[in-house]
Image (cartoon, rainbow, N blue to C red; front, side, top):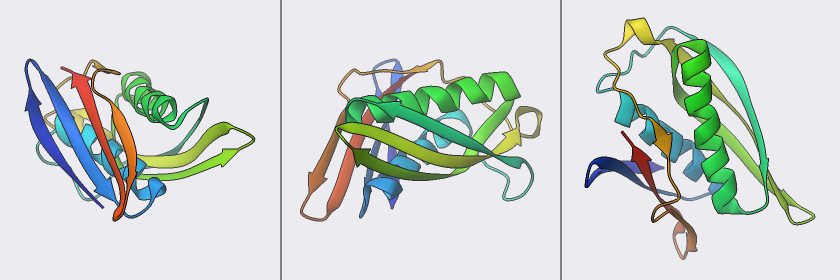
Length: 137
């Protein structure tokens, strides 16, 4: 599982790859955390649950990241150490996951305003899964 931050005009993009869809979603979420903070404390913060449903895998990734941004704003925490379990059933996509919420006052955080659909892609490859997501900063 890996991610890479990439400059994108006035925004920031995350390119991620992983052997499974679960690991891919967690990697993109970890990329979101990295876009918001240079150094993440290894300890501190409580875990919280994240559950989302959507009609497509791209919509699920968008809604998942949007929910993490919402949780950041409501809880005043940076969601890190993300875990995700992605399932497809009867044409619907669901994600059950969790994140460790590091208090924002414990990090030097930058604001990531929103996730965008601009250039978003989620693809299965011969080596696993890849995603590309642009964030408005």
